[in-house]
Image 1 (cartoon, rainbow over the protein chains, first blue to last red):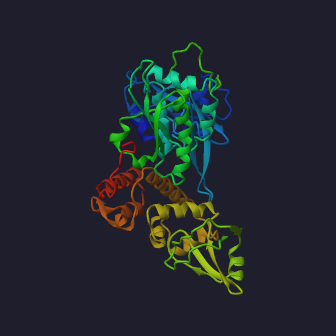
Image 2 (cartoon, rainbow over the protein chains, first blue to last red; image 1 turned 90 degrees about the vertical axis):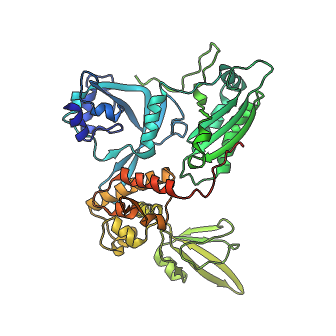
Image 3 (cartoon, each protein chain N blue to C red; image 1 turned 30 degrees about the vertical axis):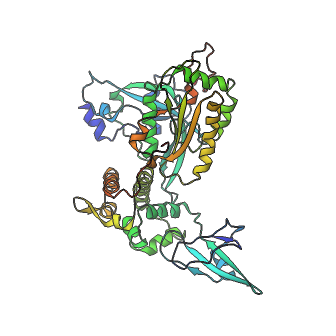
Length: 275
Length: 192
């Protein structure tokens, strides 16, 4: 039973393929000439363990690339198309581990026959774990499911910063935020004589021990963009462990790079095509 | 090791590894332990991951309080200390969790005098990833919680000393510990 074999071999969502096995898996793909790619299993663990090849014959893999350091604008799923994350590499030296920074692009994925993994085992020394794994999995799903904000809301923000200069400045300060969320009122299209009220919530990781005040000033950069188009904005920054589920359920994640605009001019691409 | 000095700090509270000072330090020098011992007399607090050493240098009638912090630049030491601090382990308990014979072995690792065997390194790696997940989840950790039976009469400490570490079980215990603790602070709506 193929699913059982793969599960016993340790294959799970987030498993990394051993370096010397990558060539075989990517042979028929457009990534076969990529230099030293990192290959991560994207399929859900239950789908990997599913025994029926008729129902589930393929495993999806993400193709990642090594980078020298993470860009804070691409960590914690802040960008729906690009993810920067950290692979922990267990060493056999007293260092115990080293960190490998990798970049993933949403469209750099392939599907392979499940049978290709049967005789292989995941990399025993490299791991995508804990919050990094959670973020990767969430990021995968955001390709298809994202919160929608009113077009009028998005258009107003875009009009406040048509060349994106202020957004660029705000993003430079973005490093520690794990997410920006908005609660808007009304959560609907508005008439010309109406305004939006916005609760702008910035979250930092539960173990963040830096200055919350400095993060608030980052969020104020975003708030000012909104205030310039007459939005009534209130700002708060909290650790993830300090916000109740009841509160967060009222909010939608805010992806500044991915506003759906009414205008005809497309946003400039924020990633280069990798293929 | 480091020397941190400021003329406007509180007197050292000789209570162990905790200390406070009012203003950010004005001087920061890196000294070897031998230089530190030769130049300054010191009191070293025991326990905890951070050693705090305090001495008074005299200049005429002016007493200049000097606060010295030991900084670890050994990654193995930092990793081991993270495990200890996240789970509130004493050095003895940390030795048990790391499956080493004694505190001395741990100190030798921390001081860079010895390196762990491969099996020990793998265990430290696994403990470290569990500690990181624990922190990221915002779980509570204190001495009482460490030894309280939480899963089938097993405490968190019991789970951490097991030969085979079950990360998911440890995190499950963390979740149960956190949920079963009294909520001391209501989580307020930040926009209320």
